[in-house]
Length: 216
Image 1 (cartoon, one colour):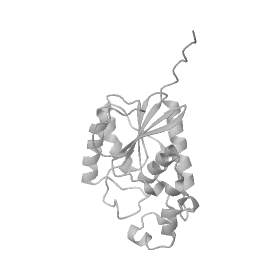
Image 2 (spheres, rainbow, N blue to C red; image 1 turned 60 degrees about the vertical axis):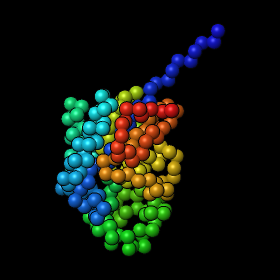
Image 3 (spheres, rainbow, N blue to C red; image 1 turned 90 degrees about the horizontal axis):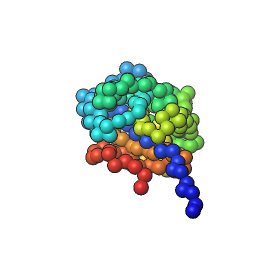
Image 4 (tube, one colour; image 1 turned 90 degrees about the vertical axis):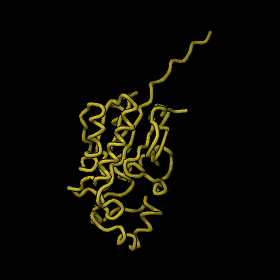
């Protein structure tokens, strides 16, 4: 009688949460500039995200980008689970360099904006990161956190572009197409990382239960 193959290690479930709405959401490109806090709406969104995540009953760790808006979004999640939020620089927003703080309506008029949207793999923000560097950074950070919590559940509060880049990587989608992914404020995207590779369970989820997140 053939021996049964022992089951492999359980996947690590990573829940990627974008920070809540700020006074500049949709207006400016804040980047890594300090001092940007959640708007009242963002505080409400953060609590709603925490309430949704609390239905999971247990997470192994909660990580957040160092920026205020991410840490403020992570705070009610940490409270829901009685855990301290761990700051991780790998979850930082893209470094937009000289574009930091610029109005989006003005940036959209630049010839470079077409490259940002259609060929991001070829673009580097003046004095900042390239999109490929950002993707390598966030994917490497998630890999590190998965190794720290094998088979566990990890919450990571980050920013739209890094989350889009992580989702694109997990789906095997080229970075030039990552702008087609929508990541709304305080949305939750879930990726299960296993020895067989990542499995995207949900993207840009803003409502409903998270209890049934598992590979099919």
